Length: 128
Image (cartoon, rainbow, N blue to C red; front, top):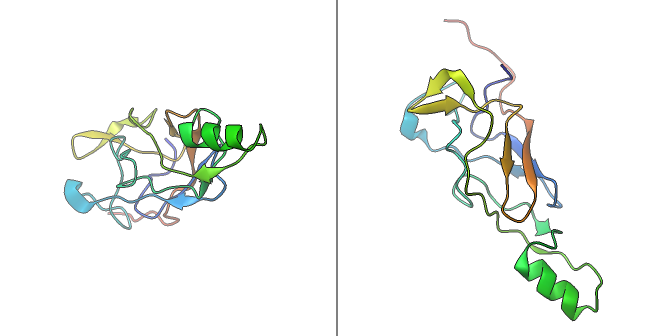
């Protein structure tokens, strides 16, 4: 298993120009060092904040701006479009009612980007 991902984990999208921080609401009542994430913490804007500007031509706003600029790639503000859960999760560890999110999990954006965990948000493991 990779490291448990928690609130504040640093994320990066392959088409984004800036990193972002994962937001985990404390609804599952599971804490690592802060609220622990599961594979269903994939909601755009709520859990996955924007990554600055988007460079994906599959993003309609980028495609329109690029067409208006006569084919010169024109990044536009990122609005993540994540419909599916993170994959893979850790099926042996449940956070709430879903598998835990681990540091090697990936999340696909509908505009073609791959969102990955750069830093899981915790560096210390607490023994019981």
